[in-house]
Picture 1 (cartoon, helix red, strand yellow):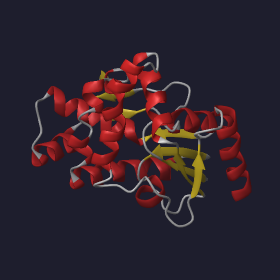
Picture 2 (picture 1 turned 120 degrees about the vertical axis):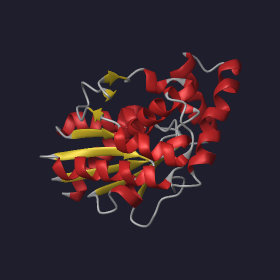
Picture 3 (picture 1 turned 90 degrees about the horizontal axis):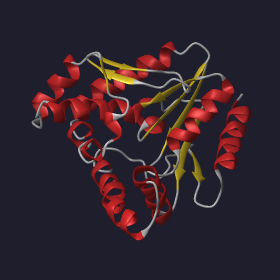
Picture 4 (picture 1 turned 120 degrees about the horizontal axis):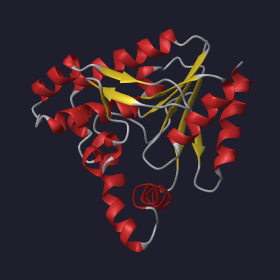
Length: 219
């Protein structure tokens, strides 16, 4: 069983790359960020912000996440939240969950269980996969890109374009979250043995082919 771990900040193309790599290899795909977003959605809807209460929500929630790169979904307590967790309100409040160490540990244990149970292989993407969740992964990659490139990509994703207004509206969403998350995870610099893949000036196909070659080289 092969494990491909991909980390990186917002806007570097982690999700699209991880899905395509999993698809081509016939592997499962795990979006760990979606797990944090789902729990943030739950806390937002229940008005929970206190760390003790956040932990209680995480422990008590029935969280289900698809491991298919083609039919991805996330549900919480039998409610499909696949689309809802991508909203700006959730994005702005993910730290409510990710900033609570005990809540992180609960989700990390779930993530490790998914990895262990993968039959053939799994591509896992997030922010602390290469260092915390799966430090012994067969392939460990940190995807990066220049800040202006990342903001433009996320603006297109959220607003449909990257004009000045969209860039301004997205700037803090990207760099602000990075600043918050860097307090609890290290995802801006590669750890020893982690391959750095800068996606600033290469297209999607080149990114995917680079990852596939790294997987091939590891076998």
